[in-house]
Image (cartoon, rainbow, N blue to C red; front, side):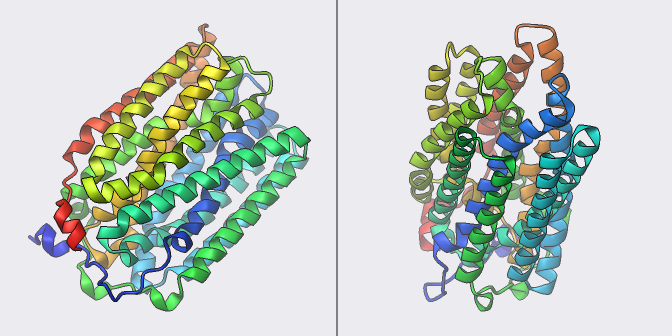
Length: 426
């Protein structure tokens, strides 16, 4: 059996040209802008418009679950194709174009249609967006392990986390301005399309095709059984899935939480404020966490981050007022930023073979998107608990989020890390 050391990806040498971390990570900025504005602001409001208040949780969860199926299946398939044909950037271009078409369909349904017919056309548009974005993300995900030496992956992951948080912050600001100025919903969809196109252009221009070398000869292509038998990959996959389960237990229903629990009349505005507070906290820790992980290891950063996130998920249930919830959100953001700052570095370190970077990163990405399937049962659980009274549904879903975060903290101990000296020598 091939030893883990022989499967490890070769690191770029000192003379290898490494693209700027800002250009390499720019696409993540637009993608983060897209998903924050779409999932947390536009979709909750649009779903309520189509189906009414009583079933909003069920249909929002259903929509997220249907989209998650695409995000679950597509990245490994496209990643495997990308590895075989030796292409990354052309596939990114195609995926970005498809996602913009999907945004147009969603905007059409949200601004001109009503009822269940409108909901299903809206769902079709969302599926197209999911298809295009994941088609682009699969080859894109291979670029960090492929181009960045292991000793610098924490820094690059920190920049990616910072741009992700910045994209989310801009999404929250956009939602706030659109709400305050009473602009039509179409404006938000147009801004999403612009953000995705511009950020993709920066990455595509900053990473020349000639610089991307898919090194088929430098590592074996592992079967799925061999991939999951590789302990670093197995435990990174499991722990990432647990953190994602915690996130998706709360995130889709944050707008409803501000209305039902915090008693905010303008739920969209209040949700935007909470989200921007979380993101400001995240920005404070992304670069620090990434650089720190290059020095002390990835896991200590995750221990602190996950514990903070679990504690705040529980404390939000007893927040006596909206200002207190905002303060708690800032602390949650500190933990979330620290986690995202090392997420990609830990995943890149766990890749066992450079012969299948895009496929394996696509499979690793499944650990983040598959938990979106929990939205549908969580939505049903939320509605059922709330019908029993006392906002019990929120206690159930927020409590489950805390459990998932804590399990992630506990089990990440099983992730074998390369010694710090090995990272520095890489």
